[in-house]
Length: 62
Image (tube, rainbow, N blue to C red; front, side, top):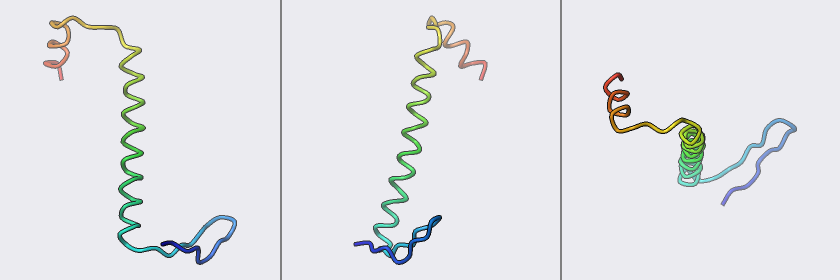
């Protein structure tokens, strides 16, 4: 359970268990990764298709 300890116009101080805090950090990291994946999927959709040979050549160039 969390409780708001102090609230100012710019910050909020809460009290919560370390287990809940760690879970919130994990969820935040998951959210960031999901945004990156979604952005990359949009990028992939806008790129032209490659043949198998072109794809292999691009990978070898890396």
